[in-house]
Image 1: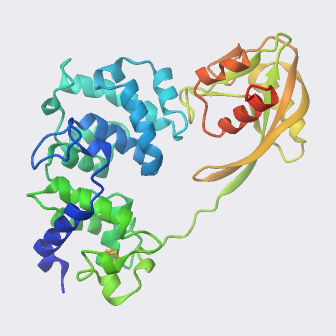
Image 2: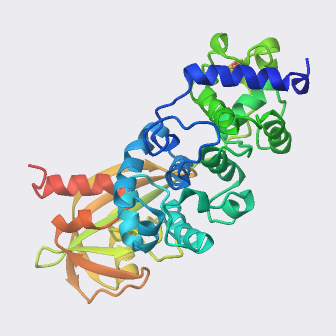
Image 3: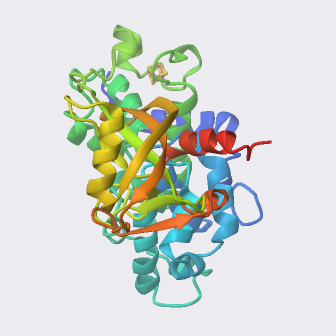
Length: 381
Ligand code: SF4
């Protein structure tokens, strides 16, 4: 049986399944009265857009409290556009991949221009064209499609990770979903219900999250099981076909918590054009193969800030996994010895009281350092 011959049946089965089994509690998918939107009812794209960006690299259950906090801090596009980047980064702190927060901030300024009005509470004035959304930084075709279908109930196909998995299984694709991208997009476009695009796309996302899961798909209760080639002919967990795994490199990093005679702590702010630009950090860097970690800390801090220090006791060591590398951090308490700090490899530095650290946005890996320091200083009692 060809999928194309079953489009209407697939739509009906999926939409019927969604009515009873969809995740109707996701807050940004509800209207302003907290109700499930009716067909063609417009709901605010603002919260949907923020959630979509948060969800790009983070799971739904982690995103929800961050999204709720965000909507309390910046309830409208206008307030977000007027906020300074540091406040935006502070509200993002803990979600990781900070370039997303910077792109949201930049996009808010572009959107205000695009809407060209102060009445950003009027949801019908937001852009509805796919290319308008895709012109914003960090918004690809699937994210744009999801915003447009969720907010305006307009037919715009999606192809996020969950949907790729469902379609790869549906047609038992013999390629990885990246290599079969074009065919999967065509499928998403042909299957999309023009009458109920919002519910259809949401049904796909919900099916991927709750039934057609990566490791243990629950095919026995899947509305697509009669059309799914992977289920009918093969083992669904063998789809999508995998690509060769990336080799994750490992790196040793030495970090110094440098205190001056007044008990102040030295922090510096990453250059804007670097990864995690604008975030604050403790000075340090990569260990060379022929040096001890204490020598790394001394050398890096002289190179980064032009000062000399004494390296004292070790505070903590731990590993932090990024998407493409694993970093092993070793953190020592240090004492300033000589030299006036200069921002040689950062945009600026500050001496701050250690109990002020929570006022500055730090990358996620630093939360363990700050927790260990608070314990060391007795702030956790
Ligand atoms: S039948 Fe199984 S593999 Fe196929 S779409 Fe449904 S849950 Fe996924």
